[in-house]
Length: 124
Image 1 (tube, one colour):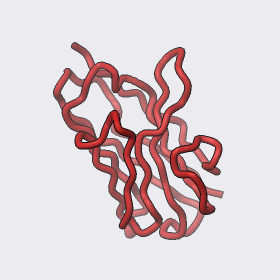
Image 2 (cartoon, one colour):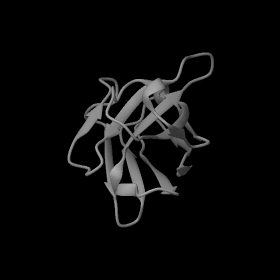
Image 3 (cartoon, helix red, strand yellow):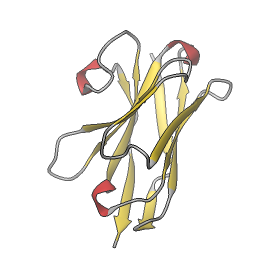
């Protein structure tokens, strides 16, 4: 299995930036895809971004496109989510997830392992 540990969340003002990290262990890192999801209070978990096993392909939700950048460093077994121009509606717990098979990158149910989440709060 894979263990995922997120870090980098916190409190930031509107327009600010944060970089989330997700460190993976337990399985060959370069052989699976990863995604970021988020869940705000009272709402369902939603897709934020995904990256292929090589890092060559990325996908973003429309709500974060142009503001967030998803990258991976296979040498460090870590992925990063650079979040710029943050808005209050970005406030949520952010989860890193791993997908071991080909599937729909935007579906929660397609992911096989999850981290514990990290809180991001954007204050106005």
